[in-house]
Image: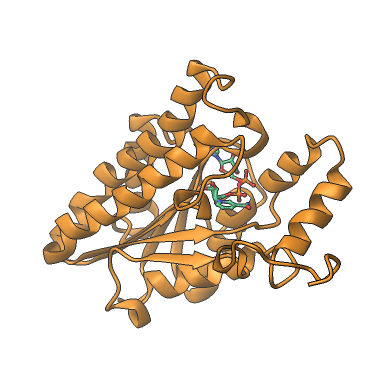
Length: 255
Ligand SMILES: NC(=O)c1ccc[n+]([C@@H]2O[C@H](COP(=O)([O-])OP(=O)(O)OC[C@H]3O[C@@H](n4cnc5c(N)ncnc54)[C@H](O)[C@@H]3O)[C@@H](O)[C@H]2O)c1
C-alpha cells in the first residue's frame, strides 16, 4: 500500500507523537485525535477529542475527507491511560478506575475500528496497528487493570485481523517494553525513589536502556506499509530484550 491517509490516536505526546512525525516523513497525510493539545506541524489535521466519544470519530473521518479527500487507509490505535493513573491490585484499584481504563483503552479502540473499517473495506485495503504492551503477555505487579486492558487489545487485534483478512484489511499489534515518554516519566515520578526505580528498570533490560519513541514508530511504519504485506494478526514485541529473559542479571549479583 502506498502512503495514504493515516489516523493516529494519542498523537500529541510520546509514542503517538513519534508515530505521527514518522508517518508524515513517510509521506502520509495524518489526522490526529488527542484529548490534549500538542505541538504538531501544521500539516497534521488535529482534533482535540476523547477517543471514547463516538461523535469525535465521525468528526475525524469528516475532517479527513474534507482536508485530504478520503477516509483514512491507515489507523494507529495508540492512545491509552496507564502507569501511575491506574496503579493498584484487584482490591485497591477502584471499580471506577477499572471501568475508565477499559473505556479508554478498549472501548476507545473499538469505536475507532467501527468508525474506520467500513471505508477500508469499501476500498478493499487498509492497515491497522493497535498499541498493546508487553503487559498483554506478562503480569506487571500493581497494574492489573492496565495489563488486562492490554491483553484484551491483543485479542481484539487478532479477532479483527481474522474477521477482515478477506476484506483487504490487515491488523497487527505492537507490544512495547519500556519507552521513554511523558506517560512513563509520570509513572516514574510517583515512585518513592524515582532514581533507584529508573536504575533498576534499566539494569533489568538487556539493552540496558529505555526505548526511544522513534524506535516504536519505526515498527509501526513498517507494519502499516507494503513490506509487512504478509503480516496480519501478529503481535510484534519491541522491548529491548525485556521479555526474552525471566532472570536477566546485570553482573553485580556475581553471576
Ligand atoms: N511508554 C511505555 O513505556 C509504554 C510501554 C508499553 C505500551 N505503551 C503504550 O503505548 C501507547 C502510548 O504510550 P505513551 O507512553 O506514549 O503515553 P503518553 O501518556 O506519553 O501519551 C499518550 C497520549 O494519549 C492521549 N490520550 C490518553 N487518553 C486519551 C483519550 N481518551 N482520548 C484521546 N487521547 C488520549 C494523551 O493525551 C497523550 O497525548 C499507550 O497505548 C501505552 O499503553 C507505552
